[in-house]
Image 1: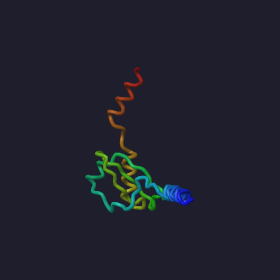
Image 2: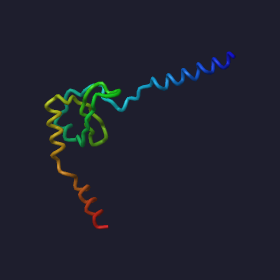
Image 3: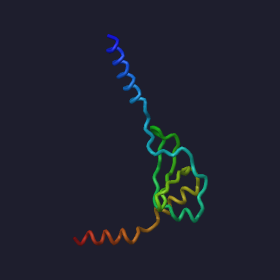
Image 4: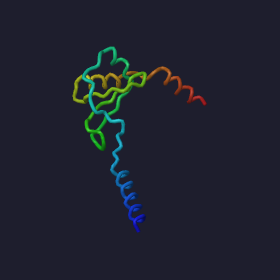
Length: 105
């Protein structure tokens, strides 16, 4: 009788712990205050982080050339300017070549 009760409590506690875990999806927890113009040239792409789930703050996440990730405040003017610059950049020549070769085959 004691074994059944103990086993039931053990299973119940494991289920409760599994349900209570929160997954953090690569969330930004703080912002980078500024970025030098030289560093801004290395920004390749960006994405938006919304405040849902485990992510507490809204952010714009920039990915740099070598894979480094920087979290920034979307309310900052320099952040919006950098997003516009990235959107206005022409596609890389290698991407254009790859598309051209794929059309031939």
